[in-house]
Image (cartoon, rainbow, N blue to C red; front, side, top):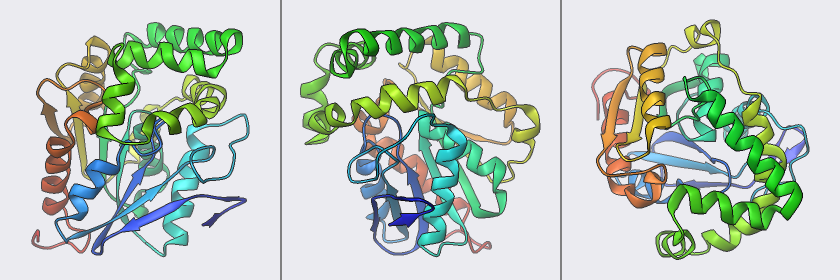
Length: 271
C-alpha cells in the first residue's frame, strides 16, 4: 500500500469500526493474535500494518523516529479511507500510538497503550543504558547475536521455542528484521520524548494495559501513564510479562474489546 514515499504491507481483517494495530519493534506480527480475537466479535475491522523495514514493507532508512512512524500510521488510515479509528500500540508502538493521539487527536477515537517504553520514568537512564548496550552488541557481534541476547533477557532462554509455538514463523521473521530493530528502532526510541504539552493534546479515551510480571521498569510505566493520563482506564494481566500480547492474547483482547465497546466511534450507546 503506498503511504507517502514508501509502500507498507497492510492487512485488513473483518468489517466494522476500524482498529489500527500499530506494529511494535522486532516482532512483526506480535499483535496479530489479539487482533484476530477482537475481529472475531464481528464488530471491528482490524487494520494491521507492518512498519518500515519489517516483513513485506519497504526498507527503513536511518534515522528513524517515533514521529515518522506516527505519520506512517496516519498515512495508513488515509490510504484505507478511515477518517477515525481506534488505535492500539504495544511497547515501541505504544509510543507511536501516543504520538499519533497527540498530533492528530481528530483521527484517534480511542487509544490503547500496552506497556509503553520506560523512557520517561525514574528507571529511564537504566533503560537507555541497556538499549545503548544493545546497539554496541549489534555493532560488535552482529544483529543476530544481539537479537539472541535481547530476547533471552526479555523472555528467557527458551524464547525461540515459546514464540514459535505461540506465533509460527515469528522467529525466522524476527531474525530477518533484526537489522531494522537495532539500526533504526532502538536509536529512534532513545530520542523519543513526550512532554506535557504533547500529552495535553490527547483527547481520546485511553486504556492502559500491562502485565503484573513485567518487572519494576514497567511498574513505573503504569504509574507514569496514570500520572500523565489520569482519565485512562487500566487493565492488569495477572502473571504476564512484557510479551503479554502473545502469552495472554485472550486476556488482552478481551480488555481491548470491552474498552472499544464502551467507546463506539459513532457515539451514543455502546454496541
